[in-house]
Amino acid sequence: MKIFEAIGKAVIETYRHIINVSVLFFQTLYWIIVGPFKKKFPKLEGISEQMIFAGIQSFIIVLFVSFFTGIVIAMQSAYQLTKLGATIYVAAMVSVSMARELGPVLTSLVVAGRVGAAITAELGSMKVSEQIEALETMALNPIRFLVVPRFLALIVMLPCLTVFGDLVGIAGGFLVGVYNLGLNPHRYIDFSFDLLVWKDVWTGLVKSFVFGIVISMIGCYMGLNTKGGAEGVGKSTTVSVVTSFILIILFDCILTGVFYFSKM
Image (tube, rainbow, N blue to C red):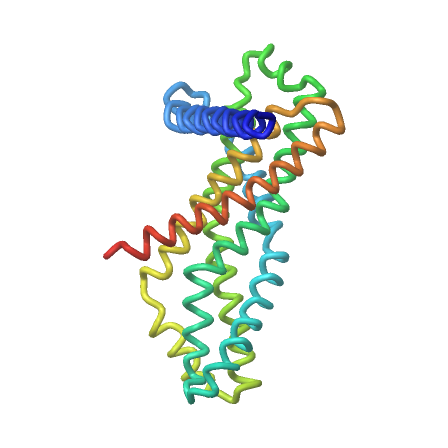
């Protein structure tokens, strides 16, 4: 019976967290839509600060991850395609796989590990030190003041980072194709973008937009519900990153299935 009790408890807790995150998401949308009319929209300085932290300061790590991923894809695909006499299709393999799948997923995982953890740690520290309660005492809504800027920053900057990662990954494949496989540079570039259709691009952008929502909501939710002092902040940060990773892969699977069976 203890096994069934543990399973039931886990299901109930998961359901409760899903409901609470959904409530937080709709409250965030409420302040985004209604805030400007009530003159209670977050200051642009706060949003731009979060955009710099989540986007611009993540460029370097996204560059390294995407660049070496493009190199690996090119080398792995060349190993098989060379046997078939279709080495030139390495270009299309790199561009399509980066745009549709690896670009948004790897970029989101990097951002979840860096930005999502920072959001949870920051809000969690404010929670355990009672700074959240201090904001409420001053009639400042924590969701409007803390969650909305981080939410907007991630849903804007994550697609931008994804496009940047796609281009860097294609550049990595270009180096392998030209300098290792001996392909013509102009022909490589033509094949990279001729076989890359618009659906491949916006599929990756839609995924990154959804992943931005996931990272921001999980990070803010875990931060705002932190308990137990410094130890609780560490636990919340760990749970936030792990949960974000799992949900990114889950939503990637769901969205890939939707786009696969879609005729758009």
